[in-house]
Amino acid sequence: MPASARALVHAFLEREFIRQVEFLAELVRVPSDNPPGDCAPAAERAHELLESLLDLEVETDVVPAQVAKANGMISATNLIVRRHFGRGGMTVALNAHGDVVPPGQGWTRDPYGAEIIDDPDHGLVMFGRGVAVSKSDFATYTWALLALIDLEKQGVPLHGSVELHFTYDEEVGGNIGPKRLVSERLSTPALAICAGFSYAVTSAHNGCLHLEVVVNGKSGHAAMPETGVDALEATTDILNALYAHRQELAHKRSKVPGIETATLNIGLIQGGINTNVVPDQVTLRLERRIIPEESAEEAESQLRSLIETAIASRPGITLDIKRILLAEPLLELPGAARSLIALRTHAEEEFGVAIPVQGVPLYTDARHYASAGIPTVLYGAGPKTLQEANGHGADECLRLDDLRKATAVVALTLVDLLRGN
Image (cartoon, rainbow, N blue to C red):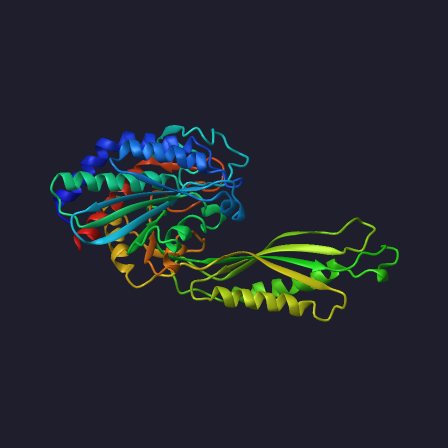
């Protein structure tokens, strides 16, 4: 990387820092909680802001209302910005999501206030729901593209395309955001960089399976329990089998740094009619985290078989098992090395610390790019851990110096990719 290009990027981002922060604040001030998932107004505001910044058309992909409803949302609009440089070259997509989890309780600051404080240890810090996960990367990626446009004006040769993909359905799985963009061929990038944090480059992540299990029996008077078929008693057999299986999964370890083991959690149980009635139905919701080395389909098949076997000897008991969510793991694909190396190199230069390439036990909608055969990595603005940012918790926050440095990292990575380095 010529020192001149790095210096030009730094100078541009220094000049633009206040505008970048104001842009992020405007996004935070528009609620985009999912659920309920009425996210079209937030996309409309982002569209207005982007068109005021970029001398480019911002394409809108309005998700049909019935499709949004089928995916558990009220409204969603995907935004696409395309910018070509020079001749030929690859297309790199930058994706971040603008939907957020609801604020919940415990906030000491307005979740939609975008309040900035000067912290003695961390400098300027912005608070607000989505400021770290991942409205921040709307700002990271937009100003990385603006920095490239500025470089081109100053004579730096670049060849290829950058696309911004801003979507609004990550909290419900990404099927009408990233998956829709690639499956409908609204975009066909060669590489994708998706929202992440600054102090590690993410190369892989877990998959996730959610199942709903309904155990059906027959009600009866508690004084004569033999007249019923106890669904709760049968459920205890299922729970015992599942918890035994959880112990086995603790020994199924991943070789990907940052990811430890496969996991199983029973997060919800409800059922019964009254204290004096034999329970006729019990519903369980369970989650299985799938390490990158596993097959998601095999994990689901194994769980279904385990549950069915657990109640096979109980007459009168029937099961309804429904898949709620199946998110495939994100795997490092051939071709990802170019962006991984560039991001790591520039992040270590900008932040002055070792930057690992690792996996995370979470799952994201970045997997949809990888599932389409597009090498995909995660990198963006944010702290070392989700906990430091209070991501999905009260008082979510972002160190604005991390935003500026991460933007430089992404911009310089794009320079490498569009110069063929």
